[in-house]
Image (cartoon, rainbow, N blue to C red; front, top):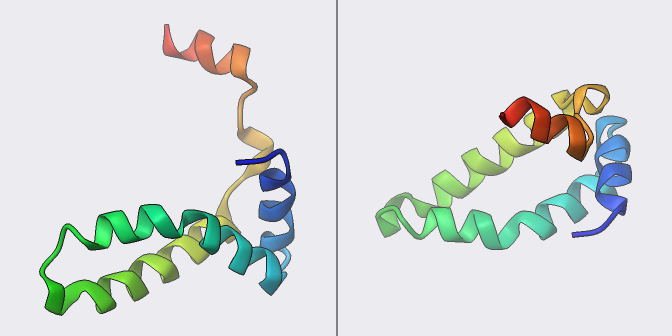
Length: 77
């Protein structure tokens, strides 16, 4: 995506609505992909539930405990 994704998450955690909207826009293709796996009559409700869950998860995400790539790879071994 972009290095600004980190900044977007930080802004979203501070209730910056523009940042939240931008993150949801970036994730929209994945949301649509997952929603299409369900029956058509449930898609709108599922999309709303996924969006709510994403917003909550973004706001609760702890950026301080995200490992850098080297540490991530060491953890995988």
